[in-house]
Amino acid sequence: MASASSMAIISRKLKLNPFHLTPKFITTFSFRSQEAQLATEQPPVAPSPLPPNPATGSPLYSQNWRNPTSVSTSASLIPSGFANSSSKIEALAQTLDNDAIINVFADWMTSQRWLDVKHLFEYWIRSLDSNGKPNKPDVNLYNHYLRANLMVGVSAGELLDLVAQMEDYLVVPNTASFNLVLKAMYQARESEAARDEAVKVFEHLVSLGMKPNLKTYDLLVDAHLIKRDIKAALSTINDMVVAGFEPTKEILKKVRRRCVREMDYESNDKVESFAKDFKIRMGTENRRDMLFNLEFSTEYA
Image 1 (spheres, rainbow, N blue to C red):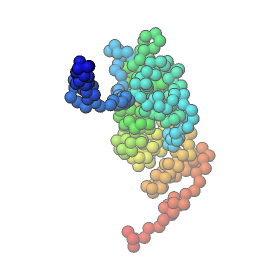
Image 2 (cartoon, rainbow, N blue to C red):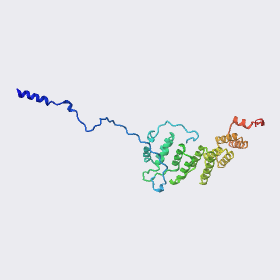
Image 3 (cartoon, one colour):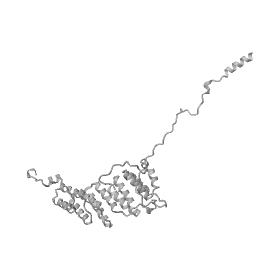
Image 4 (cartoon, helix red, strand yellow):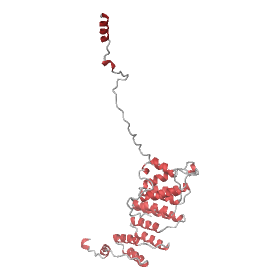
């Protein structure tokens, strides 16, 4: 009996303390819950400059300029979010041949995605074709690149440099190439500098044996009008006629407006003569009639 009582006492003393079951941790820091997080988006890679001369070994428009059309809502050949990434544009460039890239350009230009056109060309010209040779643009493809640069605001000087670099790819610029440069000079509105440079570009174009077209003469007339040189503008129209082109109503009206502002009666008569020769109905302008018939009084001189 005594032994049973002593065993009960011993068992009560040896009963485990429930607080002793709490696990011990090696670290002294409190536990923090961790949740999966999305990786932060990498900043877009800066666009690369025009590639170097391939000889160094590196692998290598029906738009109305004066009234650009609004962004088209038509379906795109390439999803809109795809071209926003430089890395994806670079990957796309490696899969396109000359015909395919022209089709992509046509779609993107309809949507006014000029910067994407510019970047795609710069990546494409660094890529290799299916034969492992550097991609080679033709003049029409390169002109798309020039036009994209014009539309994103590249200066006339930079655009002229890009035309000069066409030689690096054995591409001969055509009249459209120089017209894009003349257009950039007209948009710059740098008065004398714009006019002088435009004349130099025109002379260079002619020296290369290229024939100016109607757009070339139109842009040159604009350059002279920026300088308020009406006689030079009329001389350009005369050269246009000699070359076999007919001045448009818009060209003659631009010159006539400058005659009105400068009150140049003689030049205005020449404009009317061109209009008569080509049976162009110029219409009447109240402001023109008012200015040309105004009698000045010395009382207000």
